[in-house]
Length: 46
Image (cartoon, one colour):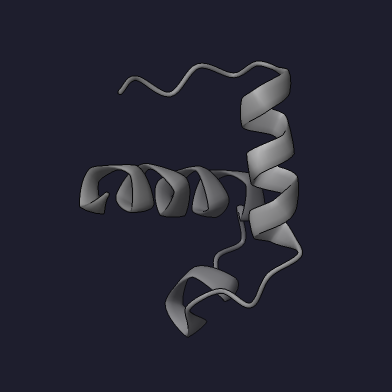
């Protein structure tokens, strides 16, 4: 499923940002991109 930046995606990113992330992701200097990557990874796994 393509990642479309809308209210639903923003809400998902906000939820992910409030949750503990993998160390590699948490150390990223680009938190939004890191969360988007995590979201896409979760989508592909599911």
